[in-house]
Figure (cartoon, rainbow, N blue to C red):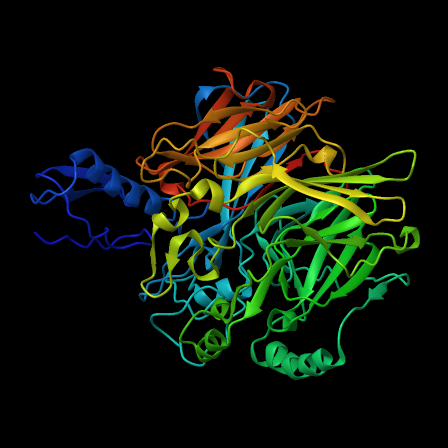
Length: 610
């Protein structure tokens, strides 16, 4: 009996080729609210439970990445199905962004990282005891070109860094940098922005979610104290001068790639952002520029650093004295770059990880050069383990009476042996399909993202005396990512870290997608967890502060019930994670507005300072 291929909205269009057990049918709901029955052949090689779990795991994974084409022009009040909105919940809106569309109407699919940005907004009104929901596509230049608003048809014309087009213009297509504003969201100075990893932020109207347009943040008023700190070679300057006209002119890449991860220095009331130079993706050096803004978007400080190493940065950290970069080492893949430029492979195939050293470079860049104690910032601290750092939860420093400084960094890191640009989320650009096994490899506890704590001891002159890398919790070895904290403690000594993890109860999906929120107490080395249930998953948790204690507040997390094709907003009491009554409220998003897995979110209090 041959496996049947189903043509419907999930990114993956056909089930895996596995031999299954005696005739039996399993039904899976699709986004059009009809059942899909998968007939299981009679030839048996494995037990029924293993067979069923393989199929269920495969389809559960696909349904996390179902395209959602519907939007809400007017807010919809969510139905409360458990608990109630607590009376002391702060007024405000939880914004969550991520990809919304993975497949067009002409046979092309894209990697989740290339999916058009879809902004979701949950406005919490404790006076009425309700949550109002809205969701809109961010009308970037690429989205406007690829979506026909009159017919509703989508046709991908941009390749995107991680994808190739199956139809349409493929060979020689220079539309690579597809700014889809799908990675993170920020509200600052009374304005709302959606960010991507390689272009300007898009400003969004916080009420209607209408797209206002690009916001040229980093080319605004640079102050006269701007500094350039250089450590490079003349030959690389020549190479850069050759690359710039090609990258800027032909491929339309912005000279400065503004990263999607920002930092908020609550003690100074500043927004910190960082950019890279486009040409450095292809050169053995890296240029990083840091910007600090006040609430009126006045640029208070700008500093540029040139590091003589080929690095890729996604997230970073800051303290009172430093910008901190974990140097993920990369290298140019010559064959891959040739095929990528011609359009045969994704542009990201031009790069690969560089595991040439067993250590990991950590750059401590002087945030205020006038206070720097003389240490050569171009020389990295080599952490005694090889790790690819994905996300940073927090960093802080403490200086004793002798002038010695201890820096602590909390982050998620994975192994160079596992990390692969071409296979993130298990996406196969050749078939256009997702393979959950990529995210659930054997030995995943050692390879996949897990939380670490880096401790660096500096003497009074700023020289490194010691650097250690340890698990954030000695007893916690599960795959874990998306570390978040109470943002009031950003850059300060924090006790609690919250993250998304999996308890490993699914045999075929032991590590990802995540199904559990874990709360780390870094003082007593303990953990507490809250799990969402069977065949349900979660995204990144967000902390909402309501009091003076660090964990006095709530956690917001989206629950994805894939078998029902429903999403829920869950409110947890941060102090009660690990207890049976941790859930304060659960609210249901209408089925026709069920949305795919999101990336990063932001909690914006209604009394946000302007």
